Image 1 (cartoon, rainbow, N blue to C red):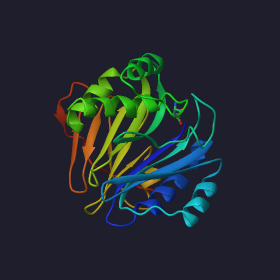
Image 2: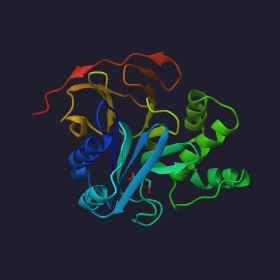
Image 3: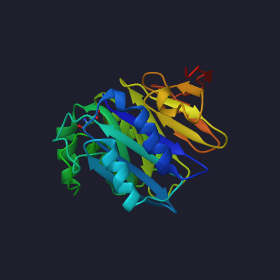
Image 4: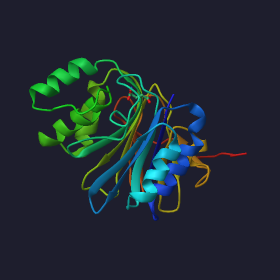
Length: 239
Ligand code: GLU
């Protein structure tokens, strides 16, 4: 069981992301990484092994930007390595993913025939490639997200960050938990509320099949039937 974290912040994203991943260390992992967006450009850093390898790397090679996503990986497809660590970027789309995409081989074949060349050995890369292929075919981010989710089989949670979109994160939950944290003109995503505990105790739990579009000021959640819905904000006791 790995960890997912995401932030649309007023401050630098990297320290929040690595702190959040620290809070998720108890879930176990073999590598870690973060991606941060700055003026529309996404950059990522990843490291095999303990989180400290990533935080040490970030001391020498810092990432600037106020929004981003992060991940601690428990490899299911592809060796535990920097090469397979998340976030994984294909074209305009960067993804962190928890779980398994069961039909990844079929998707890889389809995407290969469109010209996509896969850089990792993961099932995860198909999420980013699929979403990017829909964007390339002229879909909006919302359309591409819905089409991507409808093609994926398996149990997963994922979070997407897009080149050119400094104020947008997409979160989707289907078989793996994911929570949204509400800040003051800030939004957070985590595998659990503990990951966000340093920032907020205002939490919305996504239900099975939900997906959400987050900006710093707004969140729109859709259910498995693609109907816009409201999920309650709960004030949780971190203690
Ligand atoms: N199946 C994905 C991979 O092997 C995600 C594993 C996880 O949940 O950490 O990269």
